[in-house]
Length: 218
Image (cartoon, rainbow, N blue to C red):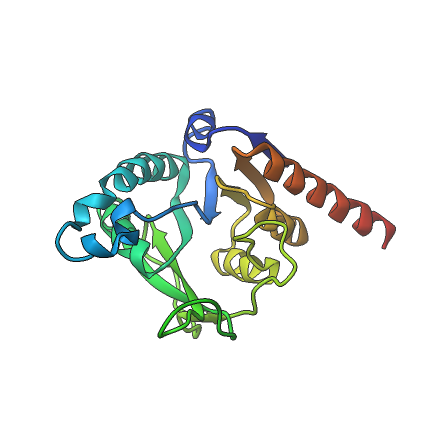
């Protein structure tokens, strides 16, 4: 089953059955408060309360994710070092365990004194892990060079996460260009993808259809 939905993620998630999802993988959009970009406000006017609007939204979002996940469900959310601090308390109060993973992009990107080479992935579970593994918490994978979306993730990285979770039904509430959907197709998983932006919804839809055409011809 591949269900692609063009709409608001929280409203569309409300239509999905309770305890029906094994795994949520997503890369939600976020931005910094206005004070982040005002040099005169860097010290005198900034407080953590500047992020309260984002925490309000993500509280509602994670409540829906928790409702949809099966009792042993898992969630992975991409973010950066600033938003990890914003999101961690919300995960901590809702899940059995919350773990920081680091995606090492194996090359230096944009930045200032210290140029960025990584992204953070929050991993949370509703129940204890059934088994241990020898895998470390740094995932090495080169980023996508020719992007259809500014935040497009490598399919091979998403595949690795799905395999690790042994998921059969995967939800991506911020589908973007559809990388999670491609990974699900490659692994024969069911996929629900939600995207509010019509342009990216169509890009994802076309990308998934093109993948099917190539698979049929190969």
